[in-house]
Length: 385
Figure 1 (cartoon, rainbow, N blue to C red):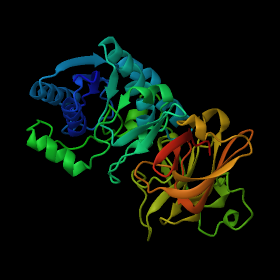
Figure 2 (figure 1 turned 180 degrees about the horizontal axis):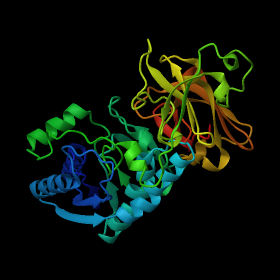
Figure 3 (figure 1 turned 60 degrees about the vertical axis):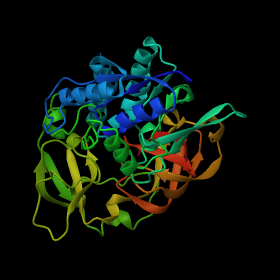
Figure 4 (figure 1 turned 90 degrees about the horizontal axis):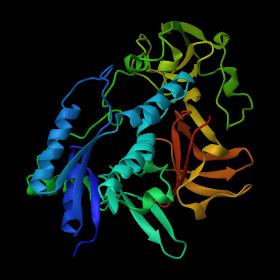
């Protein structure tokens, strides 16, 4: 029985390959569609996974499964809707998450339009997450993948009901070792390929070099803030970050531009000679200063609360929306693969105020905060500060 035509985003990796096979076994008519989304190699670190290799592996899988293979170049949409956004955010001193944007703007938008042109009833990806449907409320739910080590629901935290409606996640009920095992049993070319890393569709990059395509390097000061800085002992609004001035610490080096760095960063500072690792605790784009703290638990790295602007708050599940003045407890994640944290969120006129039961490390403006109820990702937002 044909359950419908589904277009799978074949990436050349093992996850999407097995997703296509699973759907085939379930009775769907499966087509493979490979996307090329990036041409510029500036700042990219060439390794084992160039886009040409990815396409070749995707074609080999399609041939093995005897499914139609299609190719599309979405690089112009990707540049406008993901990469230009990246440059804009870094220029403002914020740290974007291009993978979340890529899913919202490309994989579940531009890609879907091409899939519809191919007559698709559904689109599918190799994400480790699940979907359910509530017929009473006529709502789709985005659930965490059963493999706790690979759950990728966070990357899909900006999807809408219309995007979830025709989406399929065939390997969400599987764990990674079993996905590999299926690929090996089927002798798929991708069975032993390494998982891709780096920016979605761009790959691993030397970020400062990549950003210097549009953002100029500019020498600035690196200032070390002591653990006993007076601001840490004074009364402080937990929803606001700490603000430092150049007189609050000691100059210990320089850098090539505050907009190239992010909170919590350790690598790439080229500053040594300290008994403990040095981390960025704040960046000042206007003054072109990066503020540093020594040690993984420096108080400047820790936050008890966050704020998200009202216009940025997105409810994946509309019925779980917080009304003005309403407060609710959630499981919270502020970065991929971070264990879920306990906390609460309250909606006010200007936005969402999130409070953690335990202070969180390196909460970064521009990144996404995801709100879960059990394993149900119900809402998300860009972190304002």
